[in-house]
Structure formats: C-alpha cells, structure tokens
Image (tube, rainbow, N blue to C red):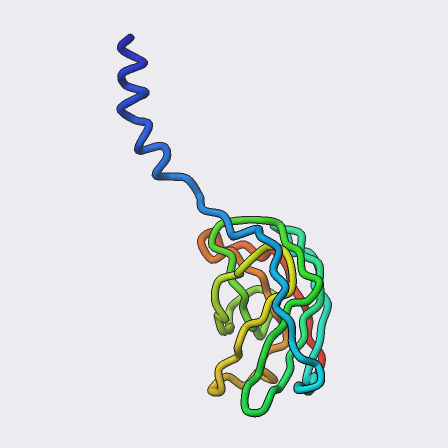
Amino acid sequence: MRYFIVFIALLPLLSACKKESSPTRQLDETVDLAKVEKKASGEFSNGPYGQVIGQVRVYSQEQDLILALENFSSSNGPDLKVYLSKEETPVNFYNLGSLRSTRGNQIYKIPQNVNYKDYKYVLVFCQQFKHVFGVAAITF
C-alpha cells in the first residue's frame, strides 16, 4: 500500500516530463505555380537521428520568398524546427519556425532580411536535443 501511495504522489511529476511531439496531421498547403517563380530546389535525405523524405523548393511571389516542403514526411520528435543553414549541422542558420506537421505539403515564409542564397541547406532539426532529422542540399 505504501508503494502505491508513493506512485500516486509521483505520477504528476512523471507526466510533466513527457516529451511533446510535433503534429502529425496531413497538411496540404500549396503554392499557385502560375503566380510564383522557382528560385531553388533540393531533395531531403535522412539525418543521423531521423528519416525525412520530400522536396524543398524556394519560390518568389511578388516581394515574398516562400520555402515549400513538398511530398514531405518526417520521423516524429519533440521540438522539430525548419532551419536554413550554411552547413549540414546547424552552426550558422536561420530558424524558420516549428515544423507544422510531420506529413504533407507545408509553406514557410522567408523574411525579406534573410538572403536565402547564403544558405546551402534546409534542415529538420530537433532543437531540444540538438539532433538533425533530415537535410536537403539546395541548388539555385
């Protein structure tokens, strides 16, 4: 009985340590190809800590730059981010934000003050544990 009481007392602490995963719902954010110009592209390959497949495209639309993940699928993990990076491991990078889903087409806006041509890679990166899930080398 004593162990049961201790377990019940510790249960809230154990559940507070749960690692949150990225959303897994299928996304279908698309780009109107008649209104954009493709500037760069690449193909994901697996990183040491995950499996990622799909394509990366950079499009210009009027004054905006858009990074699109197309036919995308990734292993799940906590705190996954999308980075523009100068290296295959993020040393010099720009964080485009949290990965919105582990599946489907996704669009991320590249801020105007970021020169996308300075970055050779797009990464799916677990910021919490500093693990690369996937890498796409982009060509212009």
